Length: 410
Length: 221
Image (cartoon, rainbow over all chains, first blue to last red):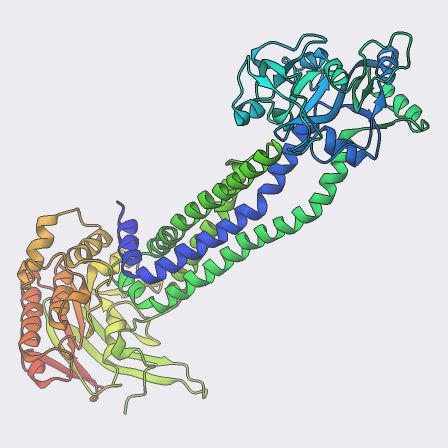
């Protein structure tokens, strides 16, 4: 151990109460800074990642409701669309692909989504090497069959495996009337997509129609087939805006850009996030300023020790380093504990959010954490420098009995 | 040899006219000289020690150490240079409260730039009667023990000059005698000068030379 550190360590241990207060203060300041500064970014990343697979949505109701019910599998959709709209979109040269989603049933609180096997080859973005919903085990449901593919979280939470049976129920809340006579057999379990569709139970849309007495083949009769929303991947940006312009004049369906809805949501969240960040930043900067003053004042109270060190041969740099190490010894454990605790709380909050919505809010350490350590450590450095500079300006020594100003000789 | 001539130290005062803290016409301190500085409180004993120690600059006059200006044109010598040349002992033992006796001596040795020598540090503590108390903190010792530890710290290096400001004033008779014995023996062994500020007649009589600051004349040892 260097001489500076040895002296500083001895002092920090001797002044336990002061050291303890500084540890506690640093812990609180860092905790507040981490909790204030980091969650907004992580939540924003989670929302953005969740919406990435959805280029365009065609459905009913406002954009917020459509996005919340389709992308985040929360709340209830406004209504259904005729299935012929899916066929119409598929026939449109401006559309690269379209997949229907039908909501309305559930299994023990997990949404049952009627769709088509094409969803398993759907890519979140062009150029992605893997599809959005990849299989961890098993296979897709077969067309027209009563088979189900489970999201990773749904399979885990419900304790289901391939070959197990899933009974659907009316409505999206637990307790609805069950279709006991026509259960689904699990044929596949998806790898986690780190988003709300981890909680989905995907079945063939035709089986949903059949469960509700709607023939999959309308034949000559009236076509009662429906979907709740259509995921649309446009051929390009121009085509996307052409479609949007066309749908803005249609009374039977709305087209929304989920990314825009999320941007509006992030903008709203951003205002609250700004407040959190301000509190976090203030905790970091004000905390550092208070640390500086506290260390400086404690240095003033213990100036005699510094004078002793000076008379023993300590240069200004030595004094500054000793005070710096004293500060670091008192502050660093609090900063580390505050950071660990703050990230622990964020992880808990993200876990609770993920458990409720499967929305993955990014947590963890980043370069910004290191930056958060800088102001308090700079405060220690400044306190050391100020104490040494102050002592260097002083002249004479001040042992207790000669501390009073000199009086004139008689 | 240290020679002091026409030394004056004044301090500014809130009233305007500066306060004269010290005025000495001349003073000579030879190598290995042992001098008792006497005078009542406020006569300038501590101020003279500060000037001789190079901790302060005189307002006028000069201090020459082996013919050279002290503390030098720069005003203050580097701390380590001064610490090697001058050792200090105060009325209140100024040990570092957070360190054990051994670590106090180790810290002083480190600041003086001495190589690590645990045996030497223990030997110094044994010399002042503190063997077996190396691990104690200053707060766990009596005042006399603390003062002896401060003397042991001064004994780490053969200083040219040791300045002691009322080193026995707060001690009982036995400890005062021990501390004084140690200081005088150290001066003899290292051939370093010893200047002790005191108003204790029992201390004064142990010194071959005395300088009373009330006389404002000259003196030497």
